[in-house]
Length: 221
Length: 221
DNA sequence: CTTGTTATTGATCAAATGATCTATAACTTT
DNA sequence: AAAGTTATAGATCATTTGATCAATAACAAG
Image (tube, rainbow over all chains, first blue to last red; front, top):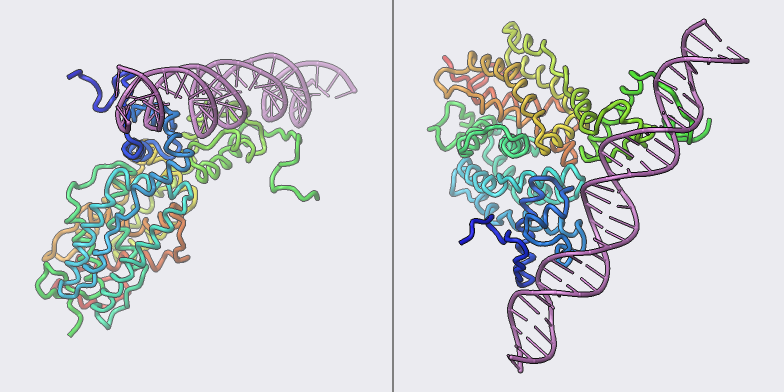
């Protein structure tokens, strides 16, 4: 076994794949590549990483723009699980636990180098991807979550609204931004961070969290 | 008065400025330019916006890299006001009000199209700018703020740590990310958003906020 | 007005980039 | 094993890009 780079990096070893496989392999490499260097990354560098020639890219993608669109699809399509909505609205489970489980699942999906950075690159580039995605996120999960919180909130306090939800969301997502965009050290385990953010948030609306037994903040009768 | 673009866009009207002025004018344009299109923006486009030739740029900046470094300096240097630290540690003022005033001043500085986007571009590009900046922010303001919060926190609850501060920070900063990076609609006035985030945060550590008279959550004796 | 200084231009270079096209060789079918 | 199919490579094109430099004109000094 020759000591060579992981893939088919041996010179002039022309390896012939079926179109579907090749396209998929290119996309795998492209996701990692564009996440690292940005959407302005050069097609020649990409092809080199993929172990193919640059011209071959154009056999599978009509243009660089089409390639990037395919990257978007691979990274963002169908990663939001519809069952999260079921979870969030299942009143047999304490609200704080529902939110905790949702955000743990959600961050498991989006807290990756590729997801975070490509999302930022796309937003800065003005791609409409972000608008579509955030709208989908809001209607599918955040608004149901808001409804659940409102239903549990203490009636004598200010009622929560969508901006409160975005603040909670930001508190949780910001750790991913620090980790993958600014690339500063962050705690390895996200669960405690999520738990704290949710507990503080719910307490602010007079909702006891699972951990604390009949919190002294309980404002309802 | 000919109906032309704001600046000196009239063709071949060579306007001669003193070096300091020209350099400053180029930087003004460069800040707006790179914030919009990213650090990969073309020097020709930039020079066109500035109403000068591309070659003139190299009279004032040795390279594109040097130009971008100057842009960083203009946007981030000396925008963090030392008196904020004085404010944060002035125990004659209620803690919630100190934090409120700090974050209102801070967001007034960083919630601009240029600041937010260049910071993101720099982070994604791997510039060390972000590391330096966040380290400075932490030691100069966030750590003193944490000390003040710890001093006021209810002793029977979990003590706050730096990650709690980052969560609060994220909740507040995230609105700027939505506004200038993702470019989705956000409330015009940031003060209420900040107030809510701080109030919820402090309540989580058993600290009453200015607005609420002797909060029912007061956990201390 | 004349002269000297220099901010600015316009032409230009070498390298890089997205994209195209034909020849080649790796599979499949018979 | 021979023929057919097509995935792939290599050469190449037209632009674009950061950068350079000599020529020019705007302003200042006398």
